[in-house]
Image (cartoon, rainbow, N blue to C red):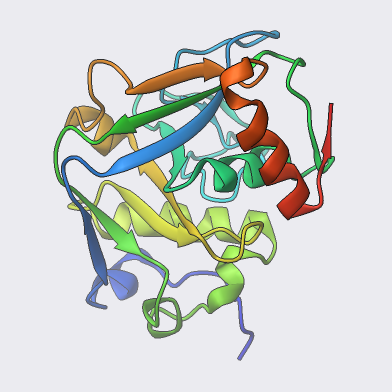
Length: 214
């Protein structure tokens, strides 16, 4: 059997008891978002366009296999540490660009508990995949994200391991989390990466990751 096959049908997956991680109210999470460029967003915006190339987009593609704006499916990526956000967001070029598209770092505390499908342990094997879901082909991971969303409607996203920052905790919150109002009204911290307050943090992360910095 392949280590990272296609997911089973929804009924078969639903018959497998999921591992659940409850991320508690008050848990601090971080997110990098882009306040400039062709598609600027707010710190708390869930992305309705998809699927993109992001690993756990659960959006359904159109008939041509492309992403589009979707009313009922949205995604919000976050992590426990700012360094994980930097590793994930800037992984393509492995250069942290503090200017292009005006990247900002927001840190916020969850406004309420949220239950997520936990992919950080052996459930990935039990459900028929493997830890390759964190680092294998992204199109296959998105198929699993779509199946998990349909199979476990009581879960509001996915807890997973960052393949770019030593398996550090990362999270993909879905539209169900948005409907639960899990985000606070305001973040506890919200600064541009170019802000002097973040100079040391960004430089340290770049050095630790081996990323360039500009």
